[in-house]
Image (cartoon, rainbow, N blue to C red; front, side):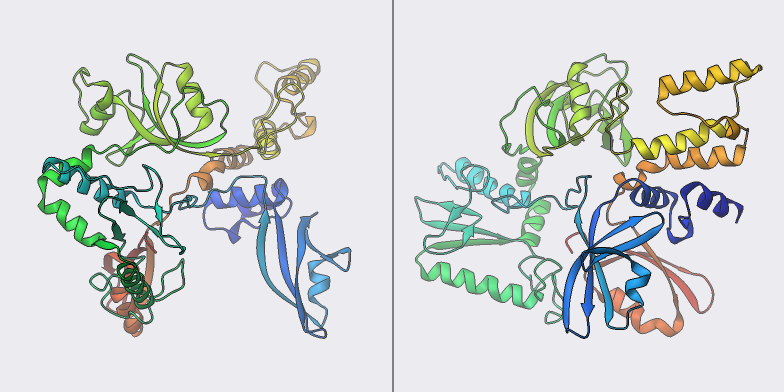
Length: 470
């Protein structure tokens, strides 16, 4: 409880017990005190029988609603008998929030569909036939004339359309044999049976228009790769065409970039991280990192090249250290950016948050041991302000290990939410009386059960996560 009181005193009343992890507490403090993202609140006037979305803001520890051209405290407006408050929706933020599944490109294709189409061309080439299939990465998906349809692949010579059916997006009857009329796809809000019906109707219409139609279900292609060594080898070695033209200068971009990059040899401190075998490594060779080789590297440039997604400032530093970009696959570019200026002490999205807790941490560390006289203490405060841009409060410079640990924790844990993985494993306790609910989880194709633990004779804990396709 002392930690709670200390945290509320430092943050001006923010209740950290409202959050689950220390990283979420830090984000809550940042959003409340330093980053006022624009939200709107649904407000319903029961007398007028009308609803509207009104701007809301947090100021001086209270929430306010912009109602009748005036900022009114949320408590005041909620006390009105004719006013009903609804949901809060996000409008705008200074921090770029990229979609967790990425932006949908003009041609919404999947990597596995391109692998299938490339394999068809390769297989025909090996048999002496030169088949050219137009797809998203070599000319764009072919648009069926007089329709809104785009097909995965199209061979103009034989007038053949190639369609790759993702099992989740097209309602595969093999992968989803049960509850087809109730199981909804999260994006389209259609049942898997509806998705399958639409798919078959579309396929029939294409045949009616005179096209030859060749189809492949996703689970069938996965099975083909298990059975066919030649196919599996081809797919592993397939390097899909990049979406953007390669260039060595990333300075005109600011955001995220997926690239292939060749590290230099002999760099003492590698720059770019690389995930391999469940570990985050900083290698100069992809092949050696994957095989965890302890021998001297003799790999080729292609084997050494890293493929990954990094922030563009990381890539800029890597280029300065001798890395060379081979390909740029995709870039999420933010046109507006801000950076802290040490000279003017302005800019930077996180400067306010960092300065607040750095000030607390420094004050709670006490005066340095070499500061004994009053003059030396005053000089210390002045020098610190000149170097860090933070003015320490003389009366608060007292050793306090607990307060210092709290401030350090908030500084160290702040970035956790920005790098959080999706699809984390869920744990749930269940009583024997909830056996019907347990059965629903076990039979739900959207959930993957990992483990279960018997806690007592009538309580168990199950571990599961959501299928990433849903």
